[in-house]
Length: 168
Image 1: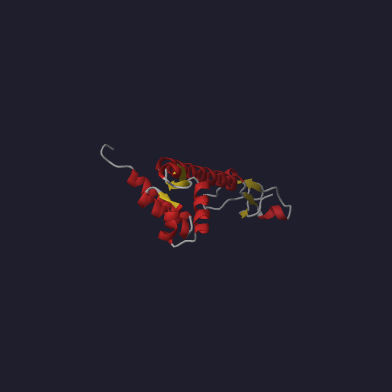
Image 2 (image 1 turned 120 degrees about the vertical axis):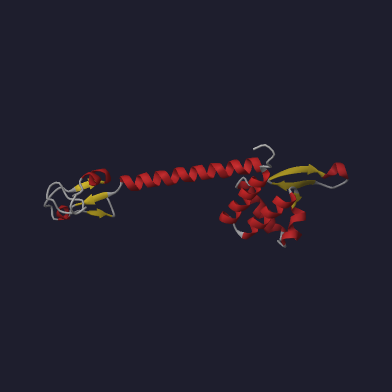
């Protein structure tokens, strides 16, 4: 991808994730940082029409989410009276955090799907009346299909069985 500026893709990804998963204050803050790159919190408050306390709380939250970072700059050398925090988005770090979260989410969904599939239990109607021992897991149930009716039939009493929503 020679000649392609990848920061455009990173900015689009970060903005899309912000809009999908965060509240309006966080989205506005990320948009300002994407546009202006480095800003002091004192400069951001008037731009966003947010109280300073709420702005700092949102910045702290986004920092804990690893989407924004800050750097302390010594104002004393330039005639100032304190250290100043400059906030920015580290594109490389933010993209890696998003990729990790997507991976962990996919992994969690796959595990939940496997758990749900493995806990499926099919019971023969005769099982409740103790007429047979027709309890089948999902794999067993798929092997016993009546070719004529397409129903799952119990091996013991040849009755169609149903999915049991609350397996033991």
